[in-house]
Image (cartoon, rainbow, N blue to C red):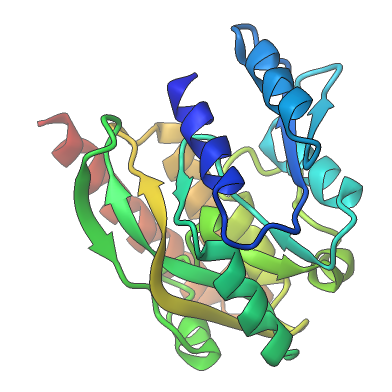
Length: 240
């Protein structure tokens, strides 16, 4: 609950003020619903979408962007924190670069106690991002701002993916327009204490699907294998 409160407040504190914040409550069983409606009651820019059934992340994200009224769709998880200038900097860049359809940022890494544990500078240019996409996720999902047409043309998130929905979307959207990352650290990204086997499976599967779209069967073996080996090593390192 405190993490969700931090996340919402970080959007309320943005220097860019003309936004709507859509929050999807996917059948929470704690005090989240009450807290969210407390936010929306005091700030008319905040709108709560209540799922009648638990739909999962991908389907919930689709409901959110399809309900949004703006041209630019920003994304953030409920435990991450946006720096005050994030939306302003992303809107300014997208207004100048009409060819860019997905814009991310670099991130400060924080743990579950909100302590800074590092920084991650993501690759900047479209060419560089695509070149390394088989072995790297080009974006911090919580940092991206997308053009509506990107989501319309790709059909949005594939709800069959329980994890790695974002990577699958970037893979399917390669022909829509260019990708880019601002080099500023405009997001505080919360790193999980443990890596689940579900995350490893879906991450590997998404890499396989990406290679298959490139019609390269050798890479369809290499990409998921490399990801799985690295993830398993990370999983056991985090246990120590």
